[in-house]
Length: 194
Image (tube, rainbow, N blue to C red; front, side, top):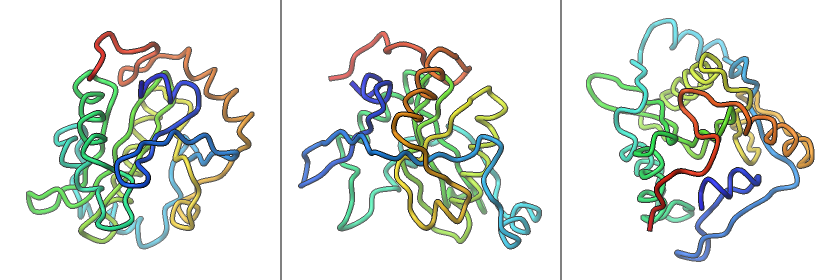
């Protein structure tokens, strides 16, 4: 169901407690596959190697860490379902580590050459931004053509995200679905979760 939703331009959110709603916004937020906009202070953090970046070593912890008290759209069912995408090989995460502890990260799913970023967290300044920069860079290296960030926020805009009209996004997504990458699926997964 997750693969089918994303391949049609939808993404899920938990609303009203445990009810899941599939959203299909009129405008879609993307990051340039060439990279995230890096401020001077973030560039300095990256240059100093404050964080060690890893990929796919603690996916379930990354998504669980994205759960926020109060206004939150990630439920326990989300954690279970997205962890299953990771186990099937098309859910991925970037992690920022410092002093042996994961202090930030971002996760999402890969369909064709589209990476759909879901959420990120940090417990140390700039950790999630470093993870996001590394993830976009990794996706570019792996042949992705589209990096979807879903809905615009001031934070995403400050990092260089931009919006496209729904029809334009769907044309880009249709093309991306035909292009496999080492991280992605180009068709529905062969095993179906409960």
